[in-house]
Image 1 (tube, chains in turn green, red):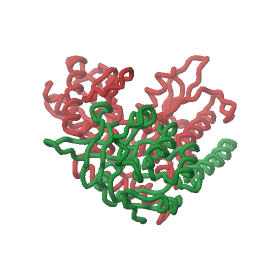
Image 2 (cartoon, rainbow over the protein chains, first blue to last red; image 1 turned 180 degrees about the horizontal axis):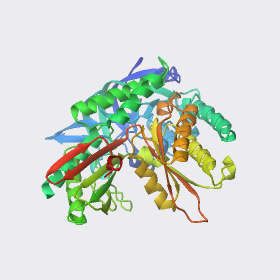
Image 3 (cartoon, rainbow over the protein chains, first blue to last red; image 1 turned 45 degrees about the vertical axis):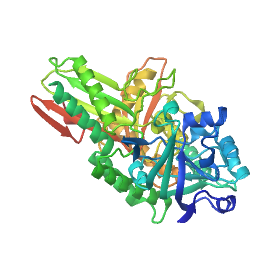
Image 4 (tube, rainbow over the protein chains, first blue to last red; image 1 turned 120 degrees about the horizontal axis):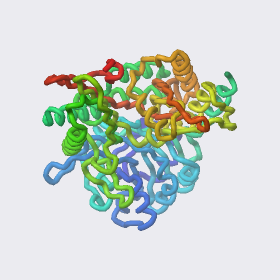
Length: 193
Length: 299
């Protein structure tokens, strides 16, 4: 397990390879569909300080408010491929070093990881209570009114958040490897009656 | 009666969001046992089992996406449908306030979240009047990740050599599972419908997800196809989360619907590993929460 403290530099990230398990320490920022659209169309500066050398988490959490403080109930990853049209540009615009999600992303993002020096981290989908256990506290929330609770930018201070590198900055992708294996097997299965 | 209904529906929502039925738990434990020691797949299975335990102990939603809530309710004639719908809505609002459900209902035109999980066709409620005195309920919470990889094919399909027969169905399901990869939070459970119109296909396929993972279709030919598809889907080695591994599906459940001569649809409702079902029955004053659907109970 490799420890990553946030914010993180490009060299550390370029040293990561597909298959590496990492634990994240510091502030990660949730952003999903509406947030990505916004980051490309409006390029808001309000999120910039948290994303420079930082991490985007594809997650729409369940949060409860007690008085003025928020607590996280469940916070697992959402499917990343929906951000494929935006992610490479978001990384370039905001200096993001890693994206956490599930299911992997496509060639545009893979090229972006290589160009900007970033990685794609896979968290275990559906393990939302387990993963919420690594959130020490909620630093704040941005654009809650505009985006709604699941879509807002939640600033989560995490301690040891676990994930696996499945796409690295050298063009490596576990998702491509698994897909090519399964597709070859599919061809064989389709032939056999 | 209305308070009992509301309380029962709320408890079903809580159970579905925070716990898994015994057959799903068992299937996940077996899948964990089969993965190679030290593999990413085995680690993922261990994490999701730990997650299930934490969710159960802490009564917190095991996945933050508490999904589309689909209800199937069989009612005796003396309980009006509108009372049931109202009770489901009130239980849904309460479950959202209590944090058992994420506000998950978005206006498709304005993009505004309703905040309480009530909206157009949200939640989905199928009510049927039946003979007898029992009120029987099934509930499914199914998240967006696996809904997005659910799919339908029209046969024949030349690209996979699929004709209008059971072997064509087999090919179509394998193809759709390969397209899905790990994006539906594999290992998944598949509900499949052969035939129907497009809408019925999805409806019947989703209903199959209420079956026990270890049961078999009463039709011997479909039962054989179910077993074969479990084996063959797992040979694709997409594995947990799409990390590569030995379990890609936990179960395949197939049913058929009559079709038009011109149409032959194969529909796959893909559920993530977190197959969140809840079941209950009300008989007179007595509320019973069940491990399995009232379909399996013979209600």
